[in-house]
Length: 335
Image (cartoon, rainbow, N blue to C red; front, top):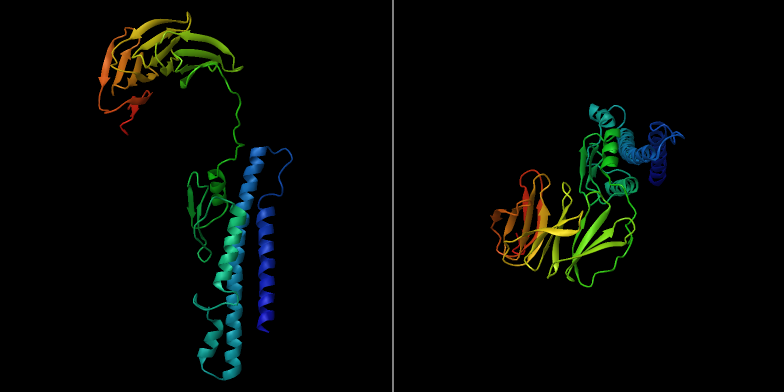
């Protein structure tokens, strides 16, 4: 008899779950969507639907748990009434109306319900991982894709929470593929810089040359010579028709791109120069190298404005920006 009651209760709970999911998945979202709906709106609606289905499943789980407990309470009340009769003290009647405590066993144990909750969460969220979910108080804690480790917490999951999860989940993009291989240098390519107008880019290599390539076709447009050592750093100004190069020969050169020749040399480094960068708003050039210093130059007068110390080893990279800190350097001394 107990087995039959359990089967009936399970089928009733599953039927209630299906109806709840159908209601939240269909009527609340307005069906499958309009024919003129764009792709982004359709995808967002689909994500919301999945999360609403997940919430509906949790609600169905809670309803199933409550129904099982009420059925067990009524059964215990009938058994007590049959044994003691109708003329017993009010404690028997009280037993019929009392709600069972959280510690009382149910026909479907908590472990089984938790497993069903976990399967429902994994099916409808399909995310990088998830934390504990409690159906009793309708609390939800979700960890999204491991790449961003975003978290959404709410006491009443619903449409707002579903929208938050859908917006936090990153869009999938196809993997990038190799587009083109350019060959022409006779040594290691040490530096690359792209034209701000996105029309060409330049490369510097251990063969002591700088090559200019067409960005669209990949064809070699020009080869510049002048360094007597490997070209380690390149920088292109977006305010002037200038390109700057730095190399192992301790030289920093300014190239006029209208005439394709060197118009200035900046002297001061005591060893090879490994990095060069142009300030985005000032007429300043910043370089760094094996002498463990970052030097700031006036690009027009060739004067050294600052010699910044602090590093104990080779300065390999430099970045500049308009706001403080305006110069950021990286060195082989782990700083």
